[in-house]
Length: 74
Image (tube, rainbow, N blue to C red; front, side, top):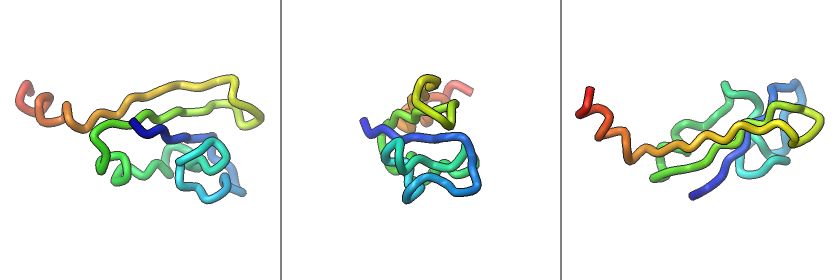
């Protein structure tokens, strides 16, 4: 399972902004690359809430393989 990072939106952004590391995190939730996540069976997205450090994190597991089962249940 690959891990991606999202940090609070800021004007300067974070490194390359590709989400693959804390230093290159996506710049706010609006910058999340959902197509990159959809290309994987599952991924972990760490939403880091403190721009000054890593002490506040929410972990979200994105599992696209369950999507078909959820659609059938609805």
